[in-house]
Amino acid sequence: MTDERDWFPLIPDRKWAYVQRGAIAAVERTVEARGPRKLGDVETFLVDRGKVKIDYSVADEGVRIHRTESEWGVEEYDPPELILKFGSKKGERWSARTASFENKGVEPVQVPAGRLEALRVVRSWTMEMPPAKCELHRWFAKNVGIVREDTVMNGTVTNVFELARIPEGASVTLLPPAASTPARAPQGAGDPQGCIVGLAFLVAGLVP
Image (cartoon, rainbow, N blue to C red):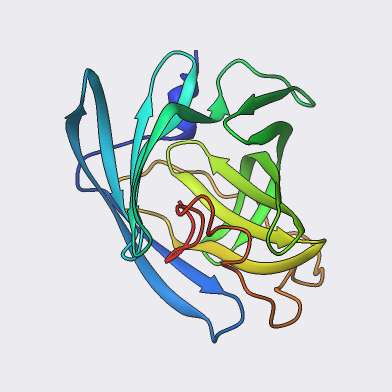
């Protein structure tokens, strides 16, 4: 029986390497999990993304964000934001804080680390200043966690965060290469932080 927690494994001292592409040249970023630690009565792991540090918890209902720390300051999430709902089916929606989420189902996703089977969840919200409809597409792969994130602003992809290499110790089966298709790359200079300032955790080094 597969444990749904495998979609987001929090292992002490695990490191992930990502390639970020946006309005600037592609850069590689290292992300590290630290913990567990206590935030109040909840056990969390601190995921250090450099410019952004995020406290996650994984419980029976799913994956939540509890706290973020960035150049914009510290934000405590009350209630915590449920970013991945365990037991949800394709097409199922839920709300958390000021955003809505939708389970888009399991699908192949291509990243620099290879082609993997991943669960895509889309976070949608509206920004008032400047007016914008924003989305964050997250792909979760078993035994790895987040393997890709696309930030979309008014229909334009402004920031892409992709797994560069399979983390050491992760048991992953790569899918066969697909036929060549155009890469989904950021379009236009856009400000990848534009949809994120009000939430302070979505750009990353720049996105959690």
